Image 1 (cartoon, rainbow, N blue to C red):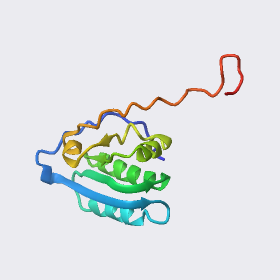
Image 2: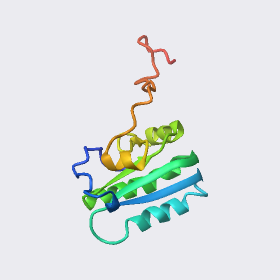
Image 3: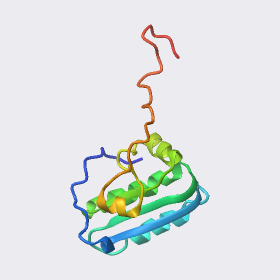
Length: 142
């Protein structure tokens, strides 16, 4: 979905929390219901200058891969404007969608908007990493 690797964020936290823009989503986010999120993300990036964008997904009850493209477009735009996008959520399901889309490193979970603003991601949930291969040492598929 996102075209380039995930370098560390080179841009500092804004000096005032008021400089951040927030987008909130709730309910289910899938292909048939993601349009309001897309429009909110586009609206939050309107105008000129740097954009520090916090996307609050704590009230999202379900999300599929349809969230990847709008989040990546917001990421690309904000980074080009010397800003960032940070995602607030506490959902293993959202983590799995981001992991499956290859962007979990780009969008780590933040527990609150304040933590996102400060750049303090949520501690790792302790999930085991995905296996590197589905074959055993003798070549048999597992």
